[in-house]
Image 1 (cartoon, rainbow, N blue to C red):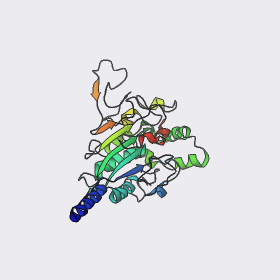
Image 2: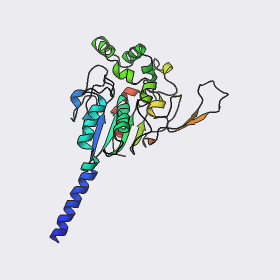
Image 3: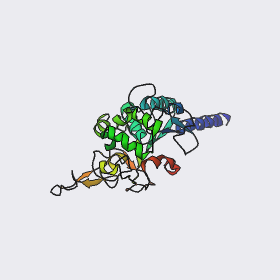
Image 4: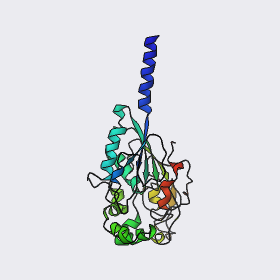
Length: 284
């Protein structure tokens, strides 16, 4: 009997380690300063609210290209935490909560660096994800002007943004979509939280429905750019007035799905508010 109880206790302990779930938050673009000090902590001003429990923040310099290869690049910092908390061979598991540029960072890291299934990433929540890039980034210097207005930056804050082009350049749509295979999720499911409240200054540059900085083709994880008004599959033409064309059905990247609490048409908030609502941080 004693031997049986000992075995059961050992089995329960092992099961607990296998199914322990670390929640890893991956922030978006840092417009004026680095968030590198947030690395592997539970304290980061970027996240005004969080799910609580067993969580940790990725801290990286969000002014830089997250795949730039420096010691404060987003993918480098995320990989550090995946190695610490998400190793399948060590009985660990985790899930990611990505915001904006963090959606690009998380999707690329999973695609490029989890091909062997080393990391047991249960699923990813993509909040206003910029996984497919943004036409605002395509504008070059004009993107800086739009961001200054959207985020009400002036003085030192505006100058800091002007000096930080790398992250914006990474989100040029052609570059963001060519950097990695967005269909290669290596078994991890991505759940999207998209927003639809646009801003008049950005709206002319973003196709279809947008959240003031990212269009639905990106925040919904569509396979191509285009003018979409809902997530998870839509028939579109190559241009709004191309009436002679038969609309083509475009679908999201493999294993990209809708967050169950969000309608296909998104939530009525602008881009910058997406990560503040803790309802979308909880377990699915």
